[in-house]
Length: 284
Image (cartoon, rainbow, N blue to C red; front, side, top):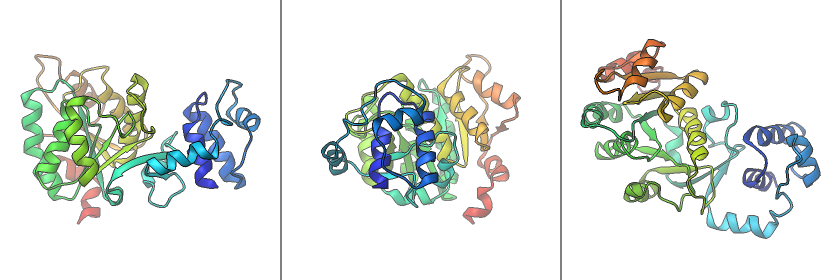
């Protein structure tokens, strides 16, 4: 009953993440997992139409038959992610769930990555995977895809967090990589199959990337980029933010330099990460 309630609540339209979190906290406090639509609206503090009653047992059974998922109440749910302001109630997944038990480093950066970004990741990744870090990113073009690919080619493990359903590959160029990661690594989404890309999905996806990771490494990020949002979320969550400096000539790393000025950790070699990272003692 609890799992069905959480699945139904996560799929509900017309109620935002904060409203869903409020409902979940009320249900958890009172250990009550059945509500009617009027109560849901009352708890969500909205009178917007919602489809609570339309999520019948048959519709939920269809989701359960066609998806693998874990709920925020499951033991394997990432502990760090529970502590963000609006943790996803449901994580749909494909792949190896045991990767959630490892230590994670998120790597984010420009979609229009340069050869410099490519070479930096190529240089850093062998040490990162050797230390046992699971690399987390968003399966986007550029730095994200490079991070996943180099983790794999260095016999490491990687987790992708996407802003669509798990049956959708976006961008299409990441399709083969996503399929490989679903088979041998792990891909997560809070959206059910068939969900197409939408701009706000990716900003919400970023909180999961920051939330499950112990730290975030930022590479080639302009000002006002999605990578900076992820970095700011990581700071808000009390995580370490590591930054690769770049050229001052093309503006491609202007956001990175701003983060360094604001107190993020400047990284020239992997030891700069390990010196600052609590993971050093956890991994060894």
